[in-house]
Image 1 (cartoon, helix red, strand yellow):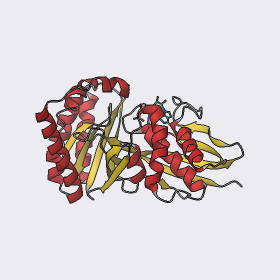
Image 2: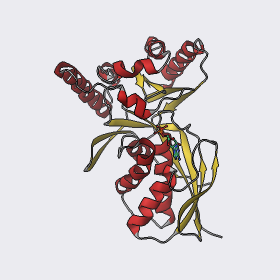
Image 3: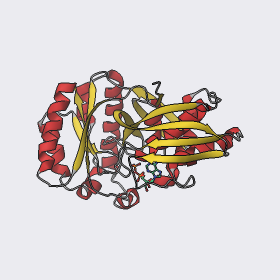
Image 4: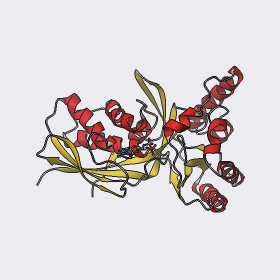
Length: 311
Ligand code: ADP
């Protein structure tokens, strides 16, 4: 029987309020699962996508196969690989749906070939090549936390410079995904072209505080720092009920809350599972008033990133 590998790669929250394009973290759930099998026809292909009818199966259009083929090309490998993709993260949700697939595919391909790439960091450019066809940008802010777990800083995409921060042990996230379509490209158009220096100073202080809070496990500092004076004001109107959701989260005891990626998902960070459950209940009842359908998740911060599942 041909060899097969099953891999899980988590959803991710990028931007994290003041960390636009440079900070992200991984969730324990949801996450995509890929089963990769050796196959006679050269290159990476998808035989089945389970859980979503809306994403392409064409190897040139699905981020999973684009990412895996970038790795095969780099290795000069003539291997044939067939994926079954279990799509547990809805595309366009703003919690790194495409990044999860791209990362799982690259990780699974490397495992199937006997780990020719030893260091996980070195898989990032291939996952980014896949992610690029979805987002149009060569960005690591979702694929890096999906691959490595915890909080991750992308200091630079080119040359790639990624720093793992880990996570405070008692930190939880609540993520609500309203059933709305927000195109990343459209959402980018709303961003200011120029920013007053005083806002840059405020934002830099907050980002430095957030990074220090994560590293020092200082939950109050994380909360004080989760303020975005540049991007959130420009984007918040794209998510109906955003202000109410944020207020509901903060009133229920969240450390902070903001837009996940370019939305429509909204996330809150909380100290402890009990507090996170209260925040979830509060966000849920606030959003029920909008009559917009939604999914809501309570998750610990994922510490391991992309992993092989042995069943
Ligand atoms: P998200 O941040 O949720 O990943 P994006 O807008 O960045 O959302 O990506 C979604 C786009 O990528 C959709 O156009 C979708 O068809 C395309 N896509 C291609 N392959 C995949 C995949 N394996 N998973 C999710 N989206 C994919």
